[in-house]
Amino acid sequence: MTDEFYLAETKLSETDNSIDSDIQGCLSSSSGKSFITFAGAGSGKTYSLKKALDFLKEKYADSFSRHGKQVAVITFTNNAADEIMNRIEQNPVFMVSTIHSFCWAAIAGFNEDIRKWYLEVIPTELSELKYMEKRGRAGKASEARKRRIIRLNEKMEWLNEPRSFIYDPNGVNTSQNSLSHADVLKIFSSFLTKKPMMEEVIVNKFPFIFIDESQDTNTDVINSFFNLQSIKSNKVVVGLFGDTMQRIFSGGEAELGKTKPKGWEIFDKKMNHRSAVRIVGLGNQIRSEDDGRTQFALAGALEGFVRYFILPIGLPDKDKIEAEIRGRMAEITGDSNWTDTTSKETAILLLEHKMAGRRLGFVELWDALSRSDKIKDRISEGTNPELNFFSEIVFPLAEASLNENRATLMSILRARKSPLLEVSVLDSNKNDPLQPARIAEQAFKEIVSNNDVNFADVLNVIAEYKLLIIPEKLKSFITLEDVDKDLENELQAEDEGDTEDDELSAWTEALETNFFQIRNYKNYVEDNSIFRTHQGVKGNEFDRVMVVMDDQEAGGFLFSYEQYFGAKELSRSSQQKKDSGEETGLDRTRRLFYVTSTRAKMSLVHVIYTSDVAKVRENLIERKFARQDEIVEI
Ligand SMILES: Nc1ncnc2c1ncn2[C@@H]1O[C@H](COP(=O)(O)OP(=O)(O)OP(=O)(O)O)[C@@H](O)[C@H]1O
Image 1 (cartoon, helix red, strand yellow):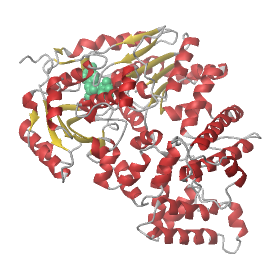
Image 2 (cartoon, rainbow, N blue to C red; image 1 turned 90 degrees about the vertical axis):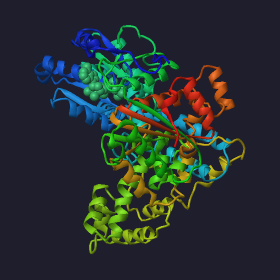
Image 3 (cartoon, helix red, strand yellow; image 1 turned 60 degrees about the vertical axis):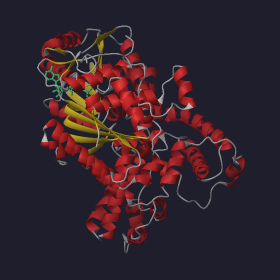
Image 4 (cartoon, rainbow, N blue to C red; image 1 turned 60 degrees about the horizontal axis):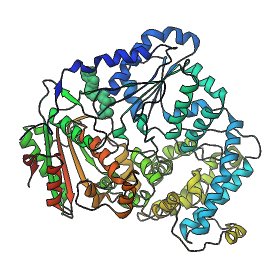
């Protein structure tokens, strides 16, 4: 049998070296050359970004520091920003930040413009909510919608006079004058597109702007940079790094990297510097069904290992089966580290947090929240503000309260600006300023002493006693006595149609689940455990990777390995989308399969739980994802 489909062709490591000097050709402040480096997994995009930064430091560090200019490096997550900062030498010429921090730094202080922006957009949201309320069913989501409408009306009133706005890129942004994460991006893009003064500020401060993982960067933001480049091409160089095949979060620009925008240079890297020859071959084969881009493996690289274990769904004790598979991999590869579950060089990739949820105990919470696409992405990143309110503030407070650790308790309340510690409250209780806080804490403790308490009850006690500031969105769930009756009448639900505001209905359900799942969630998000999600692993590499695919357990609707591997037919709506050329779950699943398959340097095992073992086996062989001998029986 020919190896053409299985093993990548090899080339010398130096093959792409000229690209770094081509990029350098763009890096002078009036070059007029912005560029896009879109290339496959492991091709050294981050590596080239570092080279470009080293080059700019050498060339401009002194003059930029005299003129207050900087090179901006924008990343997708805090982790990615840290990763880049670790790779480059610390130097004030660089400003490495997440997209949220960057956008906030640009708009902070433009209070009057922000106020006007809100006055323009809130009426639109209000009319959408009212429309949904008319069509939606009565029930908790409808209640939440009504409260949201009330809050937005209040906000419109609050916006009647000048205000100053705040924002914390890593925080929960709870107060009336704080911006949400999504709004920061929207406001920045709107200003950069519509306000010439903002264009000037940005290009004067940042003559070079790099955006990493740009395929997942918010569409509005990316397009505002395209606009900036077209207007100020002589004053700014924008460099985008990314890979269309690795776009896995919603919100990214689908067309980016597929065409050559006017006035942009395009650089293509052909080598894979990460993986063994067989793994590069698999990446190529997966990609052949998408954009057909291929990579070369390094000359002299080892062949490496790809294996598949295809198993029926519903087996008991999967943890044991998967441990057995790692044992088999140790035998097959001769690498005993496969059985060391603490190794930092091994990763077990689970589809979405739900599977980790089952293993680690937050499955109901995950089930409820993942009904909303908007929330789901942010859970995967560990950056959902409302969830973080519970995991970073409420849960530590509950622990401190239960353990009677007063010092921690007070420091949380102080750091989180508890309304009970405001000067006015303290002053009005001259004899015992902390009495209200104590009473509140007692009530809170009573509630969280119950192991079966749900999120809603915890939230309500916090609200009732004003123990903490509650994030804007969660305020919609506080049980108010006085829901505006007129408004309720006006919006009388007609109990028809099933349009739901998915974010609010997801929270409606989530709040009914057990509060203490948050402990497990927190452990999971913070822990460097061997388990990671398929999505969360982007940008990383490991010697050994085990990918577990189990649609039934993952329960998501964004990805379907069962459809991707031919065990299930496409749903009618997916088929319709496919026929009309729209993106389907199949495209998303293919990209995710590409991302997970390309993390391994040496050995990769795919564990697929399916309703049709025979079909998946046949499909893998037919599509040349697997050779016969790579499918292992246990
Ligand atoms: N020119 C090179 N010479 C030597 N090693 C390289 C070179 N380019 C990249 N590498 C190494 O190859 C690996 C992959 O590189 P890098 O992480 O930069 O790729 P990437 O394109 O950003 O990957 P991905 O898109 O999968 O996140 C890293 O270990 C990196 O150090």
